[in-house]
Length: 329
Image 1 (cartoon, helix red, strand yellow):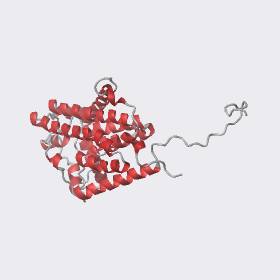
Image 2 (cartoon, helix red, strand yellow):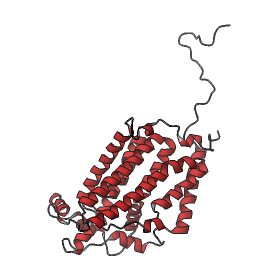
Image 3 (cartoon, rainbow, N blue to C red):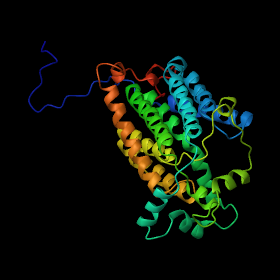
Image 4 (tube, rainbow, N blue to C red):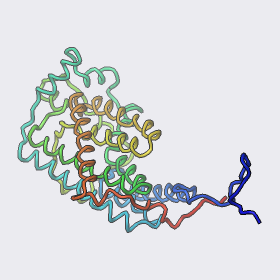
C-alpha cells in the first residue's frame, strides 16, 4: 500500500481535520475579562467613589485576574509595580519639601517664543472656556483623571498576552516616574495656573478643579494616598505626557495596528493639560523625552544577562492558563 507521504506532482492535498493551537483570545476569555472588569470597577466606584488611586485600581484588576484563574501571577507581577508607583509619589512630595520654590520664567518664555509672544493656555481658554463647565470639559476631565487608569489597564491586557513585554513596559513606567521625580527635585517648575496667580499670565481657570466640582459623583482619596506628601507643582516633566506617551509606545510595540489607534490618547492628553492650565508646551516636550528615555532604560535593563535579564522571557501567556478555554464552535 503506497505511503500517504507520496503524492503525484501538482496534486491537491486535503488539509488535515485537526484544529490549530488554542488561540490566546477566545470569546469566552474576552467575555469573562470584560464582565469581571466591569464588576470590579463598578463595585469600587459604588463603595469608594470615582477616585481610582493605584491601590484601588490594583484591587479592581484583581477581580478579572481571579475570575480568569491567574490571580497568583497577577499579584506577583503587579504588586511590585503598584508599590513602585507609591514610592515615586512619595519621592515627588519629598522633592517639593526639599526644594519648594518653583521656577516660573524659563518654560513660560519658551512657550511665548514658539507661540510668537502668546501663551497656549491663554489662547485655548479664550477659545473654549465659557465660565461654566461644558460637556467637552467633562469629557476632558475624565481623560485627565484617567492618567493612572489607562496605563495599568493596558499593561494588564499586555501581561495576559505577552508577559515578557509587560515586564519591559512596567519597568519603563517606573523608570519614567523616577526620572521625573529627580527632575522635580533639581528643577521645580510652576505650571501656568501658578504663573497666573502671581500676575505673570492673565487670569485663568483651573478647569480640572471646576470639572471635578461639577461632577455628579463624589471622589475621595484612599488611605494610602492620603499618606503621600503633596507636590502642588510637579510640572516639568509632565508625567501626564510621559505616561500617555508610554501608552502609545506600549501599544505600538505590542499590536501595531492597535498602537496606531492609541496614538489618539496622548495627542488628546497633550491638548487637555495645556487647556486645563496644568502644563506648558515645553513641559510636554520634556515629558515625551523622559518617556523615551524611560523606555530605552527599560530595554537596556531587561535585555542584559544580569540584573533584570531573567525577565526577558519568553514566558507562557498567562491567559492561556485561564480556566476559560476555547470558544464553542
